[in-house]
Length: 180
Image 1 (cartoon, rainbow, N blue to C red):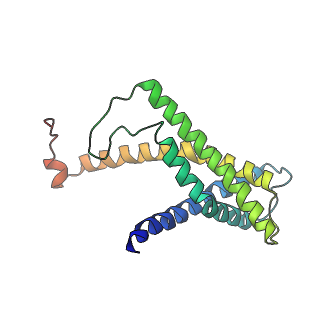
Image 2 (image 1 turned 120 degrees about the vertical axis):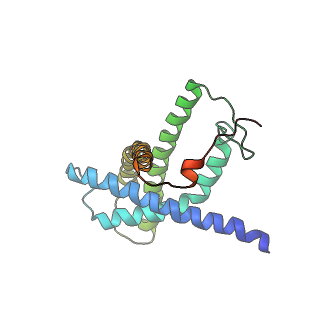
């Protein structure tokens, strides 16, 4: 029975994370499309939040299975044992494009599923088509935005650490072991 605890916790945490991500995607897309005064997006932003959170939680098992299936096509650069493999620039570019497309598809799925489920239970919300568009737009904007923010944030953090006048123990004493 205890062998079920770890997978159940993994799915629960993944569900919470994907619900939050769906919430952000649909909220961002709906806010942008609502500002353009298009029909179908004039619902309150709270309904967009609900659509994204519900859709993200429901789509979680499919996302986990899809990521497991596609990890065969795009293996990581470093495996679990720390072995590195050479990745050519076309493969890296294809992987990045695939990740962005996967995020946009996730946003669309979250919007459509969340809207359909909430409408099925009597809530007044965007129709699934408009919710899918809002989720896809939010994901298309937040995906590259997060990549750029992580790169810039990491670069700034390294620059701040290097500029500190004090010693940081591990940071100053680190060495690169090049022998296997």
